[in-house]
Amino acid sequence: MMTDTLRKQLPELYAQDGKGKQAVAYVHYFSLANNWHWYGTEYDGDDTFFGLVRGFETELGFFSLIELSRVSIRVGGVDIPAVERDLHWTPKTLEELGG
Image (cartoon, rainbow, N blue to C red; front, side, top):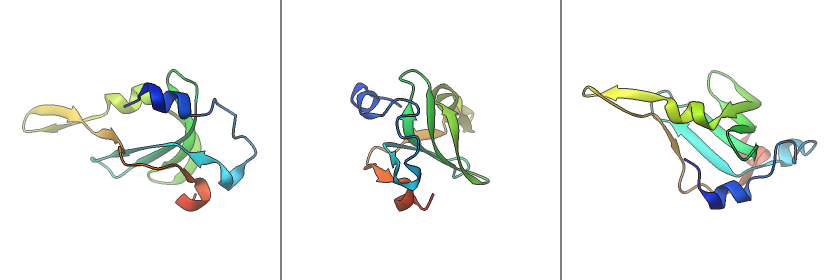
């Protein structure tokens, strides 16, 4: 769910503070189970992201890579990961995302 290249590309937490809708989302995760989306704009280099979350509401906040990686759904008696990284994602501003 995280590569070294992506980890190096992501700004540190609070690096885009004050940019508002011009902050850039460098990574996109999505859930096949419930149509939630997480757009990471900043990363602590270990587990914690800050970015745009689209679920029941659309809001800015923190989310955990570890927690995303633990979400699963049961299909045919087998648990499979329910959250994936968008491998074709290109960075976009929050404004472009409608956030």
